[in-house]
Length: 245
Image (cartoon, rainbow, N blue to C red; front, side, top):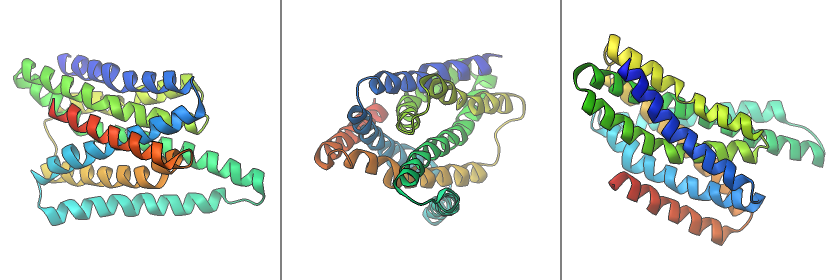
């Protein structure tokens, strides 16, 4: 029960707070959303290169890590190619609708990626709660801080795709479900294979990187390349500071 409560608290305090920030920013202007996306992309890059990938490399070798990242990129690239053909249409109106659908789809993919990434974190909370509640609480707090920028990036993408604000808040909060499931599994079953976790996590890193460079950053640079670059750099600095705190 404590493991589930810790994971729920981490979700509410992290991802939901991040989505609230994005929704608040979305009330200001379309340009603000674009700059927020650029900032969130910087934070996510810091998380991938300074947190997720080093975490994987503590478990498996560099070639295996690269293979996992490559697999994630290939999976999302294949999905992107197939879905682009399904959304293909003629005329300006169709092109605009396709662009909107592509952004919204990217938001859903980011939701899935964040959810998958949260499952191993839930396992750690559950396993920790079984032996040391204080340790589990520390992991939950770290996860909450970790999830804020993920919530911002995901919610900003959904908002850019014209998703309703209530839907955005609900969906981003649901990314915490795998955390709760992982906590239960970690408490009652124990951790899954470290190698399997590392490969899955590295694939998620690949998917997130693809989303950053293919979908998120272009939204910001379309408004102002210079300002979007500054926002991205500020995001990297903020993400680095958050991880080092």
